[in-house]
View 1 (tube, helix red, strand yellow):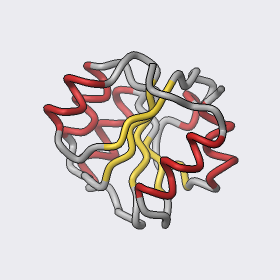
View 2 (view 1 turned 120 degrees about the vertical axis):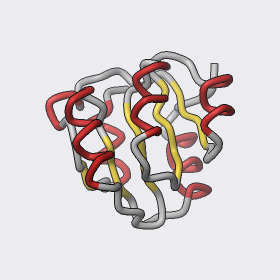
View 3 (view 1 turned 90 degrees about the vertical axis):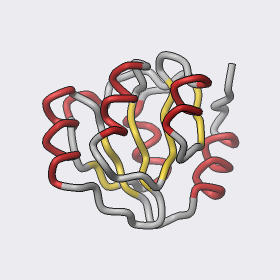
View 4 (view 1 turned 180 degrees about the horizontal axis):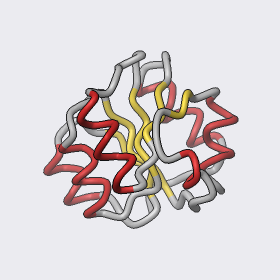
Amino acid sequence: MKLQEVVDSLSLVVKTATANLTKEVTGGYVSDLLSDVMANTKDGYVWITLQTHQNIVAVATLKELSGIILVNNRAPDADTLKKAEEEGIPIMVSSLPAFEIAGILYNLGLRCR
């Protein structure tokens, strides 16, 4: 599934790297603990979190994630937006809680492999 399909299905607001919405999404992961994300995600996953600081971009880049979904209308810091744009990491925002986002993605067929 392409990241654009995730954006459309969840009515996400894309904040950065709109040119990279053609990335393939291979799974999803929900966590707010950076070390957990580094230990358990795989290339192509979309990461669901409430964290908004620029370290999320570093983790997403390191793990080659397709994008980051911020939940509960969390607004990314200005430094985070700048870093994400530089690194080409799409950051998307939803008003939904993480539990609902994960459920919708699961119903769309995304799994942790």
